[in-house]
Amino acid sequence: MLTEFDRSTIANMTAALDFVCKKISADEDSNELRKRIADELMRSARTGRQTLAELENAGMKIVEDTAKPKRSGWFARWQNRN
Image (cartoon, rainbow, N blue to C red):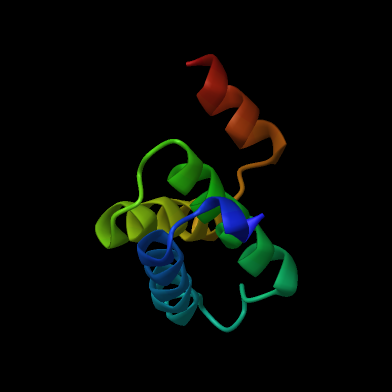
């Protein structure tokens, strides 16, 4: 719940969410991704990382993880063994 955060933290979370969502590519954008980002921002703020930069970094990590190509098939299994 947002009531657990002070005004400054809520403002930083809002600005970070806006910043991060602008970085999402059109083909990756979805409500589910935006919710994951928001959830991560709240988790970050709860653990004391409440500055704008810290929140932006937390949100961008979700975007970057989403954008990474998914490895599958025999080649991925072979790479994981080596």
